[in-house]
Length: 388
Image (cartoon, rainbow, N blue to C red; front, side, top):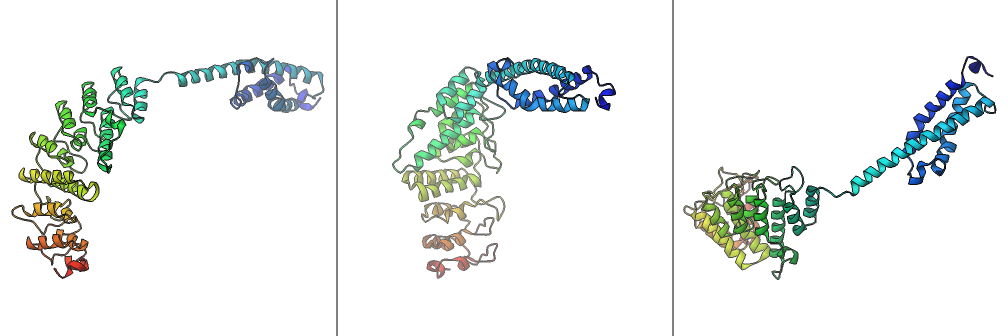
């Protein structure tokens, strides 16, 4: 026997050391293996034997060596047997606890989700019949995070409107056609949906204003604020795309702004350049006319500040909007945008001869310089340079 053993390493002390080894290593080892129901029984489990033979016994041998007991001795045999018995008992307890924990987690994962979670999933998938049913059953229409059903509905309506306008043959999506946007919006609002909840700075009223007067009216009826502005200072009237919706807002005291007029010019530009739809073109001209008659200023609040509707209109080959704006008395042909451009700069750069002639006739100054110190002639295309 070595000096260390002679110093008084009793069998009880050695067994305590073995138990400490097992208690330290076994929990971590079990976390690395996948257990089945049979693995809680040490007599039936291959996992139990594998952990003992390949991991624990090596640490037991080290502890035995440190105790000064020879592996071939009777003391070693008794220590091994006691350690093995303790290991199997601890294994049975820990394996059972681990399986129970795993079963609990699995049950939670497979358990029915809350109505709010199911609603979010339905909104992700555009399953509006399901979403309505979940709201009817009590799902939260104003969640702290995730999709607000009303906002999601308006986004879907916007998508449907864009699809309809972009389709060359005027076709619409069958799935979109099945959605009663106005009726569903009313339902959500009656269930308590917030009519003023913002989405990237825009309110539902602003979103609806760009879609239809029917959606707008439902929101206003349920407390939607027509005076709110977005992060760029634009109100609902600055999102409108048709005369009926604009009238609905004007009748409620909303004052037309330069931004609202610029939006009408943008609608005209889209009709000319993208949809190429004569009806959309006529509607945007009627919208701009209505706003001008209601007092929309053609000039920005400060010189050199965008948007400038006249400058935007000058970029179009179709000069109908430009003529409408120039007909305003007194005309403002030399308004500057944030780059110092006048409408004449834009028309000259694009080589739009008709627009150049209209602007010059209205008093546009060909010597006006932009922020780069360039005149309209300096940037003009060859076909219009002689006019300047």
